Image 1: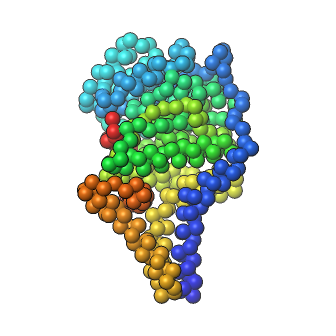
Image 2: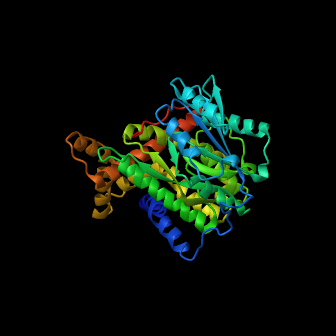
Image 3: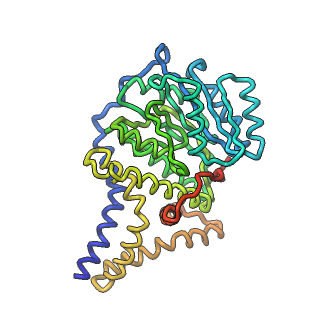
Amino acid sequence: MITTLALFLFWLPVALMFHSYVLYPVLLYMFSLNKKENQIVFTKADAQLPDVFVVFSVFNEEKVIREKLESILLTTYPLNKLKVYIGSDNSTDVTNQIINEFAAQYSQISFFPFAERNGKSNVLNKLVRKIEEDGIDKANAVYIFTDANVMFSPDAIFEMVRHFKNESISQVAANILNKGVKHDGISHQEKTYIQRENQIKYLEGLNWGTMMGAFGACYAMRANAWKEIPPNYLMEDFYLSMNVLAQNKKAISELKAICYEDVSNEMEEEVKRKSRIQAGNFQNLSVYWNLLFRFDAVMFCFFSHKFIRWVGPLFIIIAYLSNFCLLPLSQFYVFTFVVQNLLLLSPLIDSLLKRMGLHLILLRFASYFYMMNFALLKGFIMYLKGVKTSAWNPTKRNL
């Protein structure tokens, strides 16, 4: 009886993790073979192009804010249909001064410097309220949410917005490409992860319009699909994405809507960021858990792409402990136990080799995987303790 239970507790986590990381992307690709992208789109000459509001929060972004604003204003989207709303979350560097310089030159920019820390989600709520107070036609308006360190290509705005001619689509994500990749840290692994996530999200959208969460770096959504973000929320992008799906509207990714983002290279910084993300993941799970019981494409994608990964640290622990109980059963389980121990030690081994100037790519991928799952476990504990604020400092990146 104990052996049967141990076998079940070993193979179930292994099978679920294999499904999420390997089988699910393959299934998405197979399902997409005969699918066509959305054909109901605006053209650049279309007189009915919606009004666009680019909305973002900044905190001490003096290194990137000038380039960010220039990338927005160089858009091929009609400037008479574009507005930019920026909230400074009590920045203490020269960020506010730089934005004020742009606001004095360009009437499209509305700037709101806040005198105390609010956190990103609360700043976004305030900015959207400002937009709505100014008066807009929600049925013919689009919000684009973005981050200060994400640079737009000239066609990025149009490539996202053109899809909103299709009334069934309420969210479109940009294609985030990474720059600043180095090989002495984890930026190569992080870039690989993000590229793979971009492709998975694109295929989810292509197959069923069920993209599992736009990257907060840049995405567009209909103004009438907006829902105010709860206080102290850490993953407002996923909250808004899932709200679109909960309304039975479609969310897709547009690969031609290219934006550029620098990528983190330091393991410690990425662990902190992933921990914060995981705490936000469970905030979202507490709201959207019912979508796991809809028995439709949303459920399939939510379970396969997100839920399994969120509880991945628990699966790793269960598989390890059950493997220990299975050691007397056969040499196979001795082998798997040794492999698990080596993988768990991969961050330490990688760190020691790094100090010697040795950078083994496969070892670093293993190290990255286990450290990110450690971050997820840390984030879950953070969620259980209670999230007191959504304010945070920008991640150190390869600027």
